[in-house]
Amino acid sequence: MSLNNIPEKQPMNPDGQKKEGDYVNGVKLRKELGLINGVAIIVGIIVGSGIFVSPRGVLQEAGSIGMALVVWISCGLISMLGALCYAELGTAIPKSGGDYAYIYEAFGPLPAFLFLWVALLIIMPVGNAIAALTFANYILEPFFPDCNPPPNGVRLIAAVVICLLLFVNCYNVKLAARVQDVFTFAKIIALIIIIVAGLIHIGVGNTHNFQNAFEGTTTEPGYIALAFYSGIFSYSGWNYLNFVTEELQDPYKNLPRAIYISLPLVTIVYVMTNVAYFAVLSPHEILSSNAVAVTFGERMLGVMAWVMPVSVALSTFGGLNGGIFASSRLFFVGAREGHLPAFLAMINTSYFTPMSSLLFLGILTLAYLSTVQVYTLINYAAFSEALFVMFSVAGLLWLRQKQPNLKRPIKVNLALPVSFLVICAFLVFLPFYVNPWETGIGAIIMLSGIPVYFLTIYWKNKPKWYKRLIGGTTTFTQKLLVSVIEKGKFE
View 1 (cartoon, rainbow, N blue to C red):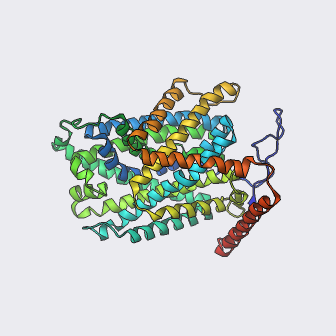
View 2: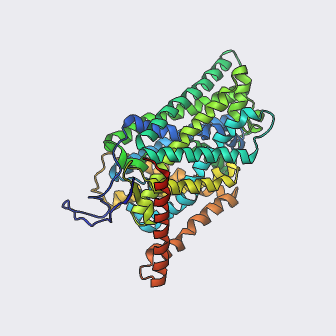
View 3: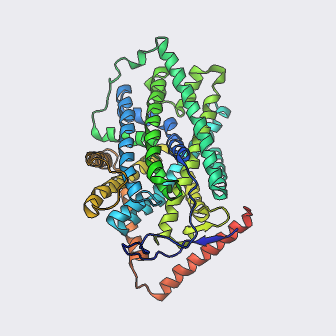
């Protein structure tokens, strides 16, 4: 087994010669993902920990069952709206890296680096850490029926599952995709059990929880935006297939098809799951429960209540696998563009996987296991993601003006990106006055990337001692990484 770096970018002219951003004569990621894999990746990432964590957060901020359901439906429509915009971006700019590639193309290296910086420090590792912590909490729930599982036990189980899935993703792309397919099917079956049980409960006349459904609804726009944060976190992942466009077979067709299939499916499942929750559990029971699905199972499934924690564990396992698979490609592309150390662009030539990027992501994810405050992590991640999704869609509008002749196999109506941009602005700015601490920290982390960019990338005439220090550190890290991987004996 060995690792190779992607070659340097080479300029190309409009006549078909080499141009910036194209990579030729080098080791590349294989196109091994078909339409079914694409749907499984989107559904598998979206339907993860969120649907079992966020119902409490949405209800808490929305104030009523009726408003909570409106938020869930709206979040699905918003995600579909965003996904349609990303279908244009993903087919017009068919590069891996998702938002990073689109922001780079539209606004240049600094905004793209800031997205990479925030994704590196918050969005990707936080999302994966939340999935791992949720997996651990639910898998331990049957062993601690009368109390919360011990925090150190939760952290240990979360760390073990992260390391296991890192190995699977390092070993083989097809194996990782197969894991995704299997657990996507399993989690949909689990949610169908919840939905069917809830509908049966409603069918025998238990509709009292829906009477006066909008009583107590929050009127503060800032709190409504926070309710959307929890809802949108549950839908996060609708744009992750754009991170692996280069590995998708026939992306011009399969990318939009995967979106059209997966987003309506997820929205219907999410809304019906929440209807089932609200039919069986009162708002007070939902707000006082740390594991809504477990409380639901205890009420409806009797001796089979153990099915719920096991099902949630399966769901979050698949979601974590998809998150690791897709988000590692972002760091790979960032390193290939020169915005991260070069060793992160190395590919395992035996298995054609971005192994160094996967291991780096794993280390960052493990670091976030130092806390078990899931809702704080959700607000950090949701704010940061909404901010840069807004930048990406703004980039779509800017590219319509800047590059009107760019080939766009899919071109959405102008009203869609404009509407989505307004919604994103609402979600980004309104929470500042009701929750300034968490949103402010997210903004500060983003801005802290500016001096990093100027010191490490923009500054070309660095002193020799500075170059030697950076180069020596990178070389040492690269050799250490190769040594560790070789000793792992993946072959």
